[in-house]
Length: 461
Image (cartoon, rainbow, N blue to C red; front, top):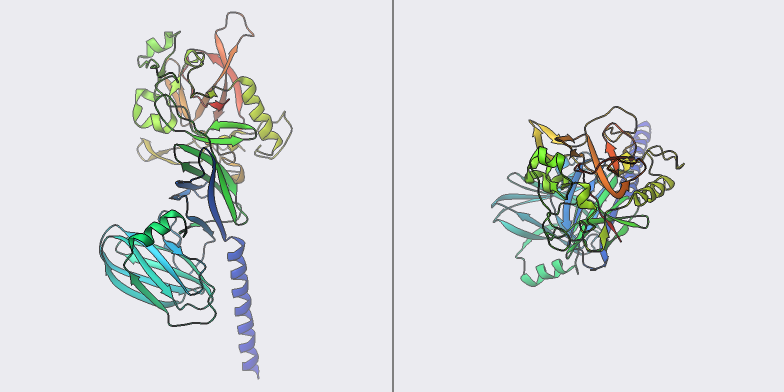
């Protein structure tokens, strides 16, 4: 009798553990789809960045992003978010297909595990390089993990069966038919891309549709559809800019990097330090006068005389005024973007919500990645505290530095020109700007010499 009681108690505890495991999975198990509006309703690609984890992936816009909690006992490579494995349909009733791509031929293992991490079936094939498609059938109702290993390739995903009753479990190779691949690419059958996610993580989505790009951020707590509002933003060099809507304003989501005005004429490039310091006409440069990598990393540095032409931004866009920035500031404060969520307009603590968290793959010094310099100051841009507020707007400001008589500040600060000249002090030739610093918590403002080289973010008219 005692042995029977112990057995019943053990089984009861096991059922409780399984129950709570499934609850934990469901609580952080979401599906996200993507649609477009505005200039196009087609989403070609989506880059997904987990701001808190520092991970990212790029996926087809017609695929489904599947956010999953970490599951122990099966292997971290199951949730490697940098690659893709597609299941369609998923969940399934009769059968599902799995599709993945091998860069090199080789011996390939496909293994299916149940939710407890127990291997239930494995096959081995020698495959050539290319897109592979297999059919999976016979799985009983439940949640399964699928792993593919071929040489250094190790990838996998989560598969859900709604089948009632187990059949003969089979993983069968299929020769992919052209019309079947076309059907999958058209969006009639959606693939699934997995990404690790924990409750409270902030995701940044950058969607590309036609000649437009749009940015959104979200802290996901349910299945949803992300709608990208595609608004054209192309400069005189035909650079395409991602845009982001914040309140009623639409901003560029990266810095301006044009070498031409919006009428197609060239902006003078000035590389000599003494010439730059004496300049009282339009001019621009790249940081350290090096186009690579700084053009695509942090954009150009422009003096105020270039801003004052009114031709610097793409047609239909403008360099924001001092009041435009103030309106942005007021909106963000009122909507809880201060790092401490205070909402009084006298309390500007917005730096963290506007600054990028990305560790850019650029080496400025040996083994030093490009990002905001660390600061121990509470709420500062360079501090990793208050993770839910880090780049909460998706504005993604990087520490681009500036140019006065020399280049300074990269990694520590960035300054954005406004279009508003400073006129309060007679004889002072200066203009207003906005400032973010690694050791500051504010979106600060000040005025400075019109000859200085600062970054520019354009705003839609």
